Image (cartoon, rainbow, N blue to C red; front, side):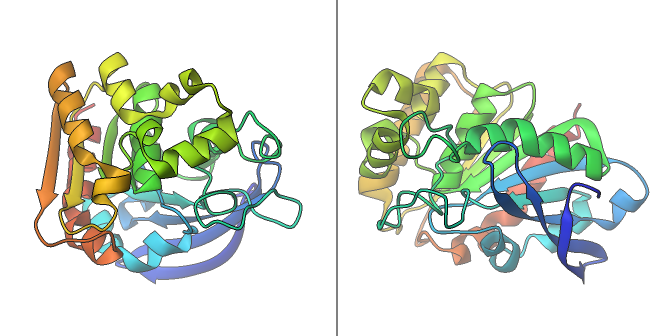
Length: 281
């Protein structure tokens, strides 16, 4: 792994749980990520799934809280969890938790002061996949993406815009229509400017209608999620998928909230979904 610096390594369910860092050409900063490498990858190339985290998260949240390693080991999946934004003293930031560092929204910023470093779309669709394929035994054509909240938005949008790269997609509690809700409107205005036509390229509901996705979309949403009505609005994605004839399994889970307790409950289902789709190629 000549590009990556290994910050930590632990054994988990027979595989390797790594924390890595590298100098990113996309963001112009040092980026951190977590990578789980299952034991099967020591023998043969295996599928790989990217995890995109939500607001305020780092590469650590999913790795520590989701409990994904056991099933990833069983299924033979590499899991890559990058940080959610560029960071550092020279990187633009905001006092709000929902903008700036920790809130990259998986777009390439075109407006000041965010433009120099906030290039998370390019990072997760171009730079990082290439680096991961060079450093780890990823089966060709077997890359998926999943995420939570802001990262669920990221997973859905980068998959639909790059179906030749990501063959499977799923999301927990995604922001499905960022153009229509406060989190997305704040971020898109800051990063992309006032022209709402540019926002549509990063809006999952718009992309479902315009492009769709060649394999089934899996989404889990808790009906006790405090952000559901104002920020997530899952019903918009349900309607868009019906209108577009998109194959989708969108499950409202009774009693579950926005936390990692919710994610840990259903992460096995999502990993099985990715393993099934990526194994069909």
